[in-house]
Image (cartoon, one colour):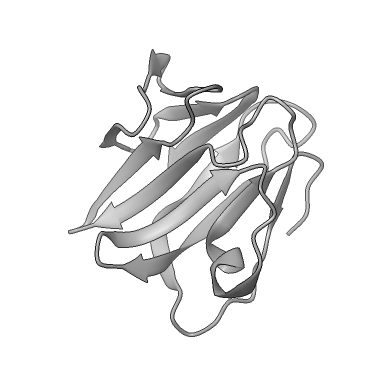
Length: 128
């Protein structure tokens, strides 16, 4: 799917894992649009990356590419492990926020329904 602020590959290989819930864009030109996320299976759980980076190959289907300049190339990861959803900040420059609370680099927190994730100037609400 391609919106004004994000790009998401929708047809992935069989190894992709559909993660529970979806993300809703809550600001900017794509406000109100929602999308499901698919993770790439790893030993740390199913992982979706978020950032400005253009990802190629088998992991492109588990990447949310944000087109905003206020987002780092490698901004954050959403991780689904043991039936719990987490978000991890990867950026030292453009910090990721969850419900207004800044996540320090390489730290993560549980992502619960209704929580708002801010990456640069793009806000998402996690919904189930």
